[in-house]
Image (cartoon, rainbow, N blue to C red; front, side, top):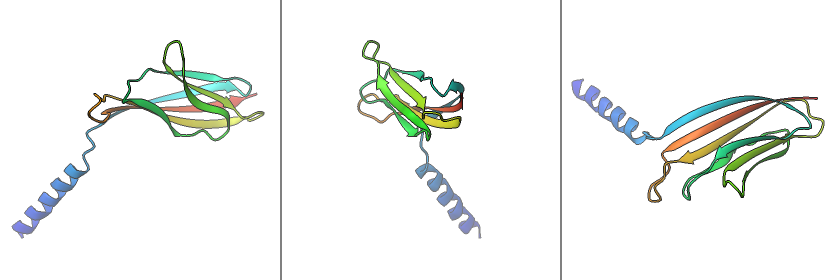
Length: 120
């Protein structure tokens, strides 16, 4: 019986090691009130060659929901404009990756969750 418990413990330890992600993640939550005629811009900062930013969960009710690079500052800017005449809530999730030295993968991520309350 002791041997069986020992084997189960070893399997559990090996299983948890195999699933160890060893990455760090920071979550930023934003609540934004916006008129249905306005554009919202959010500066995500700049990134190295091996790092980057992407939309993880796309908004649903948008005319514009995209990330562009500002040519003067080289910062990544997320822009959102709701669908014409849309009133309600919308949501987008953006994932920024940091920490690559060019030879290894990114080891730090910032997840930005933006909830929009769109009004007339």
